[in-house]
Length: 604
Image (cartoon, rainbow, N blue to C red; front, side):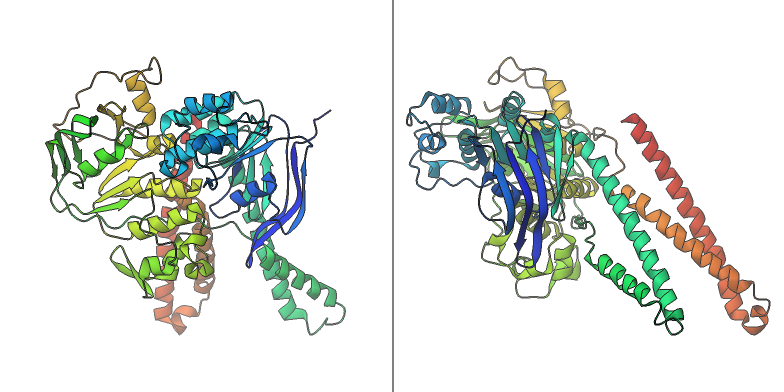
C-alpha cells in the first residue's frame, strides 16, 4: 500500500492581475521523493513553492500537510531581518534549539565555511546563499523546497550540495536552471506549463523529449480544430439560408468550437536572443603577459599569461573569492595588474553584463530601461519599436510599463540581456549570466553566443553551459594559480585529474601554446535551435508550395488562358517552374536535416 503524501495540493488557483498563474494545480509529494519543478521564467514556480510551504496566498484550493511533517524552504532571496549573526539566523530554523552554540549549527556552518559570528549584512551573495542553505538543512526536514539553490554558489559548494542531497533521507523539490544539477539529482519532473502541472515519473534527462511530444500533440490537435472550424464556417456560409431552423444546433456547435479555440492557450513563445553585430577588430583581442595581482597580503593571480583571439569563448571558473572577477577586469583593461602587462586588440568594443544587475533601476520600467522616453530602441544598428523588442524577450505588453522591481529574477536577467545585447560590440563579457534563466532561454543565449563573430569572456558555475559553449577554461584554484585548459568544464576535469582533498593544491602549471589561435573543442552534438526550427517549418513550406502548384496547374489547364491572357500565362508558367525549384530545395534540405537528426539520435 502506497504511503500517504507528506504534502498535497488540490485545485490550487492563483491570479496576478489579469494573468492566470495557477489554474487548478494538483500535485502530491511522497516521503523520499526527488522532484524537479520545471517551467518558464514567470510561470509561477516560486509562487507554487510558497504555497507548498504553507503561505496562504492562493485564491482557492486546498493544501494538505501530514501532521508533524517538517517543511523547510530555500527562497531565492533570503530575509535576514531580525537576526544579528549568521548563527542566530540558522538556529531560528530549529524548533528544539540549544542556542547559537548548537552543535548542529556549528557543524553545518563549518562544512559551508561560514563564520557564525558574522553579521548577515556583511555577507557576499555566495555567503548569503550558503547561510540560507544551512538554515534550510539544519533541522533535517521531511520536505525541502529549494528555489534556485545553485545561484551564486561556486562549483565546490554545488558539488557539496549535490552529495548532500544524494544522501538525503527526506523528500525535496528543486527549482533550478542548472541542467547538470537536475540530471544528477531529480528522479521525477513536475512541469508547470500554462497554469497546470504535469508529472513525468522519470529523470530530468527524459524531460525534453517528453515535453516536446506533448507540445507536438497539442499543435496537431489545434491544427485539426482549425481545419474543422474552416469546414464548418464554409458550410455555414453556403447552407444557412436553406436550413436555418433545423441546423441551429450545428451553428451553436460551431460557436462552441470557436470559443474553445479562443480559450486554448498555446505554448509560450521562445525568446529571440541575438547579439549585436560585431564591430571589426584585429584577429588578436587580448594579450596578457605574466600578470599578477594581490590584495593586501593575499595573492589573487600570479604570473598568468594568455592570448585570446577573435571568436574565442573563454570560461573562467573557481571557488568564490578565488579571483575570477579580478582576472576578468584585468583582461578587459578595467584593472591594472601589479606586474606584467595586458594589451587590448585594435578597436575593441566590449559589452559587460554583470551578475549584480547594476544597469537596472528597480523603479524604472522595462520601456524606460531600453528606450528612456522614446518609442524606439537601436538594435543591431536598426530602429525597433520598444514593444516589439520586448516581446522577443517574452515580456507581456503590460509588463513594459511596470517597475523593474515587480519582475521575477529570470525576467530581470532577460531584460539585462536585452539591453546589453542590442549594442554593437566585438567583445562580450558575462559574469554569471545563467542565473534565473529557464532552459529554453539558456539554449538560445548559448546559440547566440556561439554564433557571435566577436570574443566571449564568461564567468560561470553552470557546468552544462560551459560544456556547450566555451573553447577553453581558465581555472583559478584560490591560491593565486590560474591555469588554462582546452575545452569546457568536463575537459578541465579530465585534464586536471582528481584532487586528493577539496583543498588540495592544484596540479603544476601547464604551459599553453600561444603561436596560433586555439581551435574550438567539439561540443556535444545536437541540431541546434535554428536547425530544429527549420525542421519544424519546412513541412509547412512544402505544403504551401504543393497547394500553390496545384492552383497554378489548374489555371494553366484552361486551354483559353494563353489566347485570353498571354502575359498571365507566361507569369504563371514561370512561377510554376520557380515553385518546383523551391519545393525541390525544401525537400532536399528537410531530408538532410531529418537524416542528421537520426544520426545524432543514434550517436547519443
